Length: 315
Length: 309
Image 1 (cartoon, helix red, strand yellow):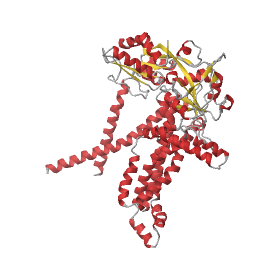
Image 2 (cartoon, helix red, strand yellow):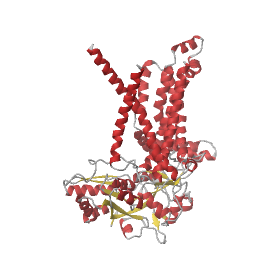
Image 3 (tube, one colour):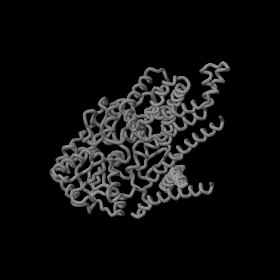
Image 4 (spheres, each protein chain N blue to C red):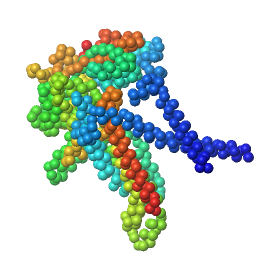
């Protein structure tokens, strides 16, 4: 009798601890947002929202300073979109292979290896990019420019003046987002009920037709979520892009931008926050930039979440 | 059942809240609720170690090599004194001095008025110690045929009004390599080369400059890219790059940066280097500074490619 009572109290206590952990993580997010807001809002004393979002010049230490986010936002966008163009096809292809084609043994070895790629610290990616990948990309791009019979603007673009460029960041970010996309897309494909495949095959569809017409559409929401989480990872990545994109705060040109240095929002915050005098306009504007970044990743993650939940109801 | 669930939610909220409040209460006791800075605990405060103890120096990356060499020599001669030196930029050093996380702020620029005000608000009175001069070398890729440039030509290159080497005797697109805007070298270059010493000038660095984190980063980028031009401290020049002779505003022959040309003032791009301390710093810090300013310290300044005061 007594023992049961102690057990019940213990259970209640453990439940309380677990619940506190859950509540704490929510409270932390709210506090971080409050902290960001408190330090970001004074920025509007020195710059209006329109000036910040539409300004083409980022000169935080000039007199008077210019706080235009446009080059930084477009820099982040260019690097992110570039990385997704590489990582989405490869990532989904790899996920389909692992879930649908590969024998179980191959899959059991290959998936952990892909996931291990996600555990490599970003500074290591940056270092590899700085020392090796950047130079390879520059050489390959120049060779392609010389060999291809393209229009002049393409030749100019491909003739990279420096190995530090948006494309170098994009390639490295693609490697870094790949594990996220492969892992989550593979899980989604794997959770498609076996009867769907059996049904399709029984109707006489080939394996490829089944993958294309049944399995992928059934796992659509999970695959979309994997891409969105990849976007979140790419937008928020800091160290690698700081090291390899060249940090030129210039609005990227439509034709040559991908092959020239750019600067992302994350790299700007990382490079400048440490040396900015506290409570100055520059300091607050950097927080505003951080707030913007927070809102972007928040929207991306929420979208991913909504997609996953909608998908769950479909089955 | 439902009621007990609500009670436990309430209790867990209370637990989390009190834990957070407990954490928040401390900074307020130190009377700086507006500053989003981690409050410095007594234990981590430098200069609190009594006799011996540690001297913490932080700041300019330009000064990092020479400050480390000085620290090593001084520690060898004075067992019991420990000096730790780190970089991050002149601004980082001043912030650390203000936040009392370092004893010496190494700087390649003078302290700004707003930084002095912040320091005074925290009870620190910064003292300026001139320890020598730095010549800033303008470097290009070894494949670049250009040997000398005037200050005006360098200025126009970095402003972006000259974007090809063709007019200067070279060929191809110019790649502008710079330090990031928090570097003291960047600010010096902006004021003396871009604005040509005119504080009211509206000339600015071109937006397309690559803002890199350190002197070696700039040097490597110039090594790798044929069209590149960069600027680095004289102490960081090696034979992987080509140093440009600079013709000053008054004209005349191009001058190569060297200890002699910086000291006699004939090389146009050079600047003073400082170690800032608190006026009320402990004796071990003032002893160290007098050693730095003495013969032994100055010999190290010279040895590291800088110019003694």
